[in-house]
Length: 458
Image (cartoon, rainbow, N blue to C red):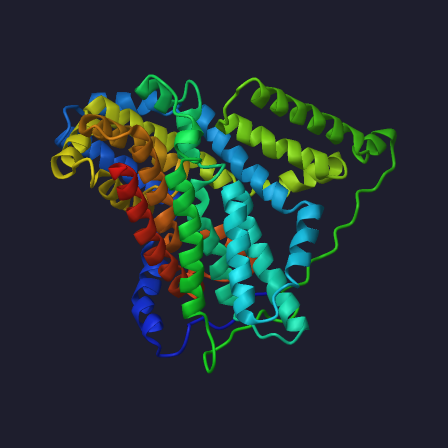
């Protein structure tokens, strides 16, 4: 059951008036991410034949040869989302969220709690952050209503989604992790890997993440409904979850599936492998991150029955993404075959210098994110161009990598693709939260641009 009224910060307020046209454009004209991928495929093909140096046969050949180029990467990205969703819905995590939801004593405390927890979860893994934001928003709204604290539910949901604005700065950032993964397309282009100590755990990225969380929290507090502002609460009954029945145990096979031992044994084995990996000097890669979350899930679930149920529930969020990655890989193939990578790189080099490169790369990545909303897919398409341009300008490659990462997470705030899982949990539409997430976009954009310019100068 969804909130029935469209959520405006205040009827007639400046923010509501400014955002109303954007709301209409988003709802009426932005198609699905799959359609965007198809359109981008056609656009790149035409560009390759016009400003590039390839004919129709070369374009088709490059596209077809490239389709399978990201299969390993596609699986790694799908696992991050799948495992993050599963982890967020395990019983211990759900109980923890229910406990945390009782902390706020005022509506403002509730909004800020949801944002900070969602941001922390997004820094751990983006799949977890997306789901936690929606679940905690409902739990806080439910707890507030029971205690007589009126909270604007769309603001809670917007705060949860705003936490997603730092995901690419965290442990599951697909861009920096790809650069740290041996045999990835980035490692092949550079001829070496870039450890996450130079990207995710660099002092400037950590500083940027903390500054973003603090400043966005202050901005959300400034625009939060108060006084005579309209409040749309969580509808009665919307916060109630159906009690799931345990599987029937009728056969010896059922008793094995209901036992904790199978999942616990494999989980502990994975945990032991991770300890050995890091003790021997191993680095965090996409695979290692996925095995970390898989180990945690297997250790805390009750039995294989629960793992199967969690997997089925999470799988619905993965399918649409899987179909897009071959198209992105095909786009990469066309760009390589037609020379578009070098052409676009020349354009960026002609207007940038070592100081402004990071900022310009951020702006271009933010724009591209509207058309390639998958962080992994966008990185596959855009990173080779940015790395080529950074090398020619004498800019460290980690700045190019994080500029693409920042641009992706930045305009997610007004791009509805990644809001879909969270909005489905909350029962709202993008227009209900866009007025608030636009504030997150503006504040975080200033931080990201400043961080990249600072990193370029120092």
